[in-house]
Image 1: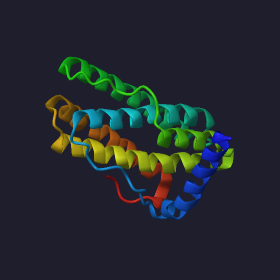
Image 2: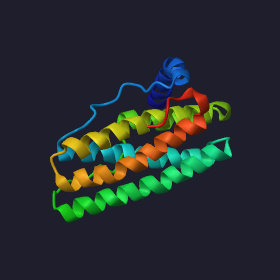
Image 3: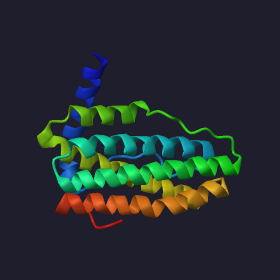
Length: 182
């Protein structure tokens, strides 16, 4: 029953956002920068886990070879981003442990992908990626500029160009429905 309700809620969210899709708008995001290290690590890590899981699903279910290739690139890049985060946390001695599971928001997005019909899958996946990467880019840029831990600021600064490239690829594959490159 819970799964049915979450799937219905996700479908409603997509339906409500479809008019924004054509305009290339990005849904409301969490704050641009969590300046505290623990908040940044939590937000960035959960978003990164989502990217990996969504990418794995899309690599299997996408109808377009281009979307499948994009998804595979996201899995590889975000796996490396996760390794970089773990390494930075270990060497910095901050004592922050990143989450190892998705939150309810990202679980709902994954369920939405799993429930999508074959004909709708690529559009839904690209829409999710547009929003997720725009949010991640704001997070990385914001923490790089205002974060409270130098090692994590450096990581955010190193990660932002990768996220920007991903966002530009989503926009390119989405065609004219998106705004100019980030």
